[in-house]
Image 1 (cartoon, rainbow, N blue to C red):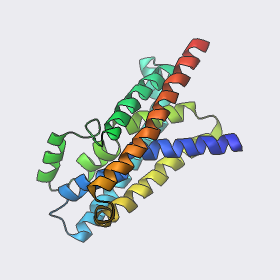
Image 2: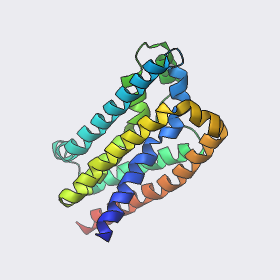
Image 3: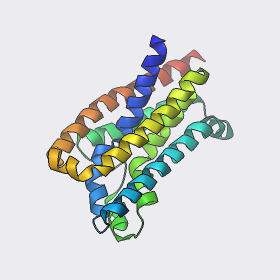
Length: 208
């Protein structure tokens, strides 16, 4: 049970930190600034549902994708570790260039509906989050660990929805400086997860 709880905790924190909903708040408020409170609530709900469905689909289809392209799990784990490392370095600098680009944010400001793009993809469910859930689902053993992966995605989606719904209060309480501090702390922990992904991938590759 202790091993399962450790796996479940690492899985949830990995998915939550890579998605980093707090860091999404400033951009979310900008691209929805012309919406009413009711419209913002609907946008946040649709974006979180879409992100959860996207991550769930990649978690479920990860093994199938590996088989099609002849990719081994250790190889993808190493690649995923490098992607997480890049995201973590961005987070340590309080940036999100690997999640969304300035051009995507500008495009979002001009769109009437931003729930699916850029909010759900790539802001919430970006390349880092997708690769993370694929690796975690690939290394899950047994129904309990597989359920932990899907549970982590669901809980992260709920956390994202709550965070976006109280986005204005988050900005008021934390401010941009506070958000940057939280993002850097998450980036530090995510960097450790990235290194562990690479170490485990190399170890598994050498064992075969």
